[in-house]
Amino acid sequence: MDIQIVIRGVDDDTNLRRFAEEKINKALERFEKYIINATVRLEDVTGPDKGGVDKQCGIEVKLRMGEVRIKERGEDFKATINIALDRLKVAMGRETAKAKRGIGEG
Image (cartoon, rainbow, N blue to C red; front, top):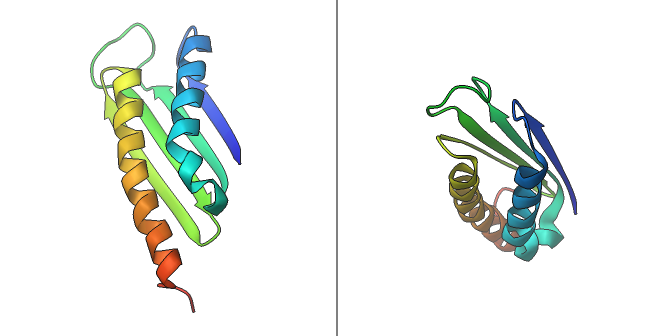
């Protein structure tokens, strides 16, 4: 499974990258056989000097039978990543269940 993490607008992204890698790998491990690749985009929209609800986490997962996209915003990167991954797991469960039942195939 190929996972790419893109971080923008963050001064020190090492710890954030490590946290995101660990969380995304754990969240997607049970769906691994369905996944082609995943891209996680983490961005501090207003930059590191300003606060507020400006931390954005976007996740795009390309599956053998489609794709799942999640976007979440919050005040803290770790909380935003956790919420986005919770939503992603629900969406992935729904998509993989469709594939198991053969729904959506031509």
